[in-house]
Amino acid sequence: MKRVKLYINMALAVVVAALLQSCESRIGESFSLTKTNLESQLSSKAELLIDNMADMYGQIQDIAFESQYDGVVAGILSSSAETFVPSELTSDTIRLKTSILNLYKQAMHEYSLLSDAGFSGKPNSFAKSCNLIVEAYGKLNDSIAKACGRQLVPLVRTVNYDQNYASILLIDALAAVWNKDVDTWVKQLNTAFLDYQTSLSMVPDEAFDESKLIKYVNAPYNGKHNLAEVYKLNLIKERRATLNALVQRQHNISTSLQYLQEALAEFVKKNGENEVVMNYIKRIELLLDNRDSNNE
Image 1: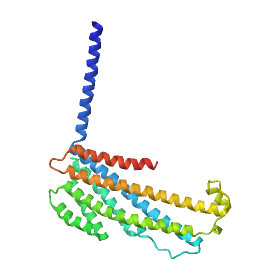
Image 2: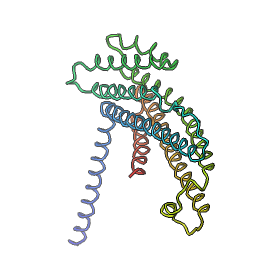
Image 3: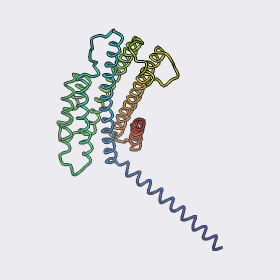
Image 4: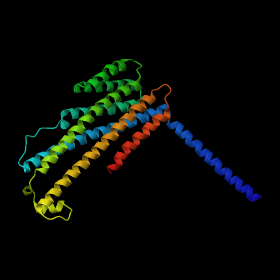
């Protein structure tokens, strides 16, 4: 009988422990879903996203330059070199957009401080960052950005302006410009790749050193012509793989940007659900963390 009571007490102890753990989990989850905590996480994910976008701009410029450089070299080797024309993907416009992203990161940092009671100058600092972004957008002469400025500038001039709505206007403008850029990138990168592929195919066998080709072609082939053709195919394969990885990363960033917009829209709703906002935040984490793990 004593043994039965012992088993019953042990079972009750397990049940109580499980209930306590469940309660602690729910309390922790409830704490993590407070408005203040969500605001901080939204700004943090926005900064992470902006970092990825800035890095993407850098990658775009690098691969555009490499494609053009390799294309010119291939043209020289095939005696069909043309005048070098810099790509728009390496223009000052890209550099300006990168500087705008830096302003965005500063703005999102100040947005995160809005929930910090100890930061007394928070509304004015965030408003100043908003105005700087609008001024920078003016240099781009982008109609979407100008439309944002017409709404944003009057908003942040008011005393008790809605900072959350201001952040939505900022992110919406960024998304519009980013999505427009993506369409341009896809076309120009594909054009650069096709030009490179065409120029490479015209390079004659005589342009290659057979003794060096053997070091780069890891395949059981003989003959200079065969080695040269396989080498060129390998170069094309590597470049295509780089482009595919770049397009996948762009897709992840674009999707994360969309999730951020939807999270902000839900966050400012009068009866918005915190769980929905957290779900979008987790989706952004998965997309960007997946990208980072693929680069390791």
